[in-house]
Image (cartoon, rainbow, N blue to C red; front, side, top):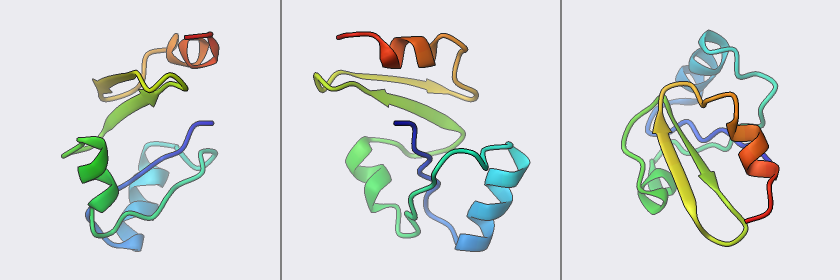
Length: 76
């Protein structure tokens, strides 16, 4: 499952970010205080992160590459 985690700002700012980057089809998790970002080791956006079932993590800046969905659905 792909989930957006905008962080460290107000709900209105999240909505603007999601609309600006056309991310409305992705469920978003509220993270106003930034705690979830801290736990994930993220400090800025736009940034993407793929956490696989085996616990391995792949990270990148900006827009995720097209093959990230294929990678996310591939066995570890």
